Length: 467
Ligand code: TYD
Ligand code: MG
View 1 (cartoon, rainbow, N blue to C red):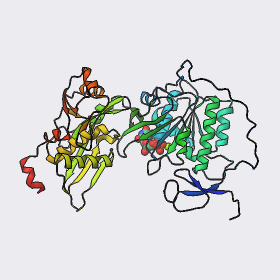
View 2: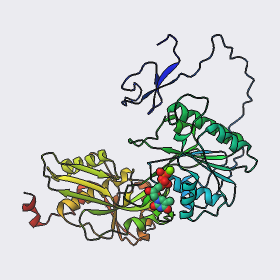
View 3: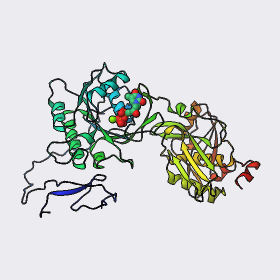
View 4: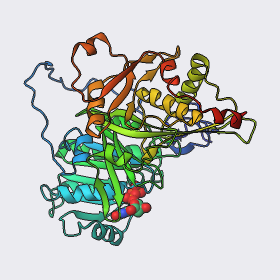
């Protein structure tokens, strides 16, 4: 290759670049992710940067004016955004293929188009396909302006200069299909994704247009293309759900205009996504109350309490190495809870397979689920159903202690609302117990995990069964 060659190899996973091709990226250690791209132009030798003008500096202190918001009317979506879309902000919506991103965004554009002009640009589907979907969703009469395009130069021109519409919201579905004419690399490559996003963000700030970008997710669960995309935009939302389940969860992971970790719950139906305003009732609706291994966890997602059923199955293993399989929770945390139960509470799982699942396709990230998981494991191991009107929550430490968690009151209130009578939970800190708990539940405070392991007693006939 000629000296001073203008090609670089960029990692499609982390965005790092290196001058030589290799099988493994030196930045993130992933394999086969380096792709040849034109090197960015650098400053010419001797360039003088001292030609800038002075910037006027200001103080932090100023009267606070909350940003105006576009309320879409889909409450679950508005909450995740922190109370509606902020004009001029850029939101990235990521998710697996087929999870319902296009459906959600078409619904949002359609409802918001009653208030402000909205544009929906698809690089993935033809106009007819989108119309067909709109019909199915019952929004074909709304005034969303539609286009099927992938050339970003054309899109920028249209959004900025079109005489037909002055859009306030533009949905770009998806950023991986867009390309800038001036760049050689193919759509979806790091430099195209980055350049397209950059130009759209500039347009958003310049014209006060809210832009929602759709982004694909890789097998590993990261947004495809460079991670820099997440840094560039104002908010990042993930749309997730288990395949085969009809619940979908919209989760805020970054928000420059509101709280993160807020979730919105939707149900995918024949006529599009329906909001689920009372998710706890839905997640518990298929519960079999007298089954062993099923425990109700009172969790918090963002500002909202949500009750979910945690199911465990401890089964004899057919193989030498027992299986540990988890759906909807962290497998490392499961290993930890098992280890604590074995070492601190004298429970023997031995060579049995352990399966753990959060019913309904929900994903839990809170450590407060430890106690509920431990109870579900004990219940399945002993074949002794957990008390049916009881919720569990609390974090388990490595010494076998049960640690306090936040938002106790909110968790109890939600459980009370759904008819639960008891709660097994950590001892409240002196600060918390100073306040009188306004709760209709009787509370069973536990300090050590051992305390709950004693409440699950193995039935005598079960002993011989496992040897
Ligand atoms: P889609 O929005 O195309 O997913 P994404 O843009 O994330 O790839 O969703 C497609 C799936 O949703 C598809 O499998 C069919 C299903 N679906 C419904 O169940 N009901 C509906 O009303 C619509 C429009 C789609
Ligand atoms: Mg799509």
